[in-house]
Image (cartoon, rainbow, N blue to C red; front, side):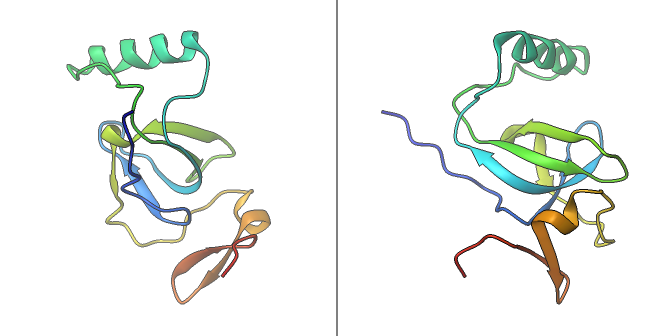
Length: 111
């Protein structure tokens, strides 16, 4: 049995390594959970950038994408911690998070 460990946390602002967009993590799947068609399209997109295929046995993060109304689904291999500390702009943030001392705190956490 292979165990995946999440490198990033819910509420953390991350950036896509190849496309540059930022987002705030609102959920984590510990391995790929969308349909095969999405996976194949994502692998084609990475291949067009000269990148290796996306492994399914790694964490995938659900992001509120900064500057849009969209959500993104990104593999751990394609994310890094965001260096830009500006607040994320997304219509869904207020429903899920409060901003306290520069950190996004999930409204429904047990803390």
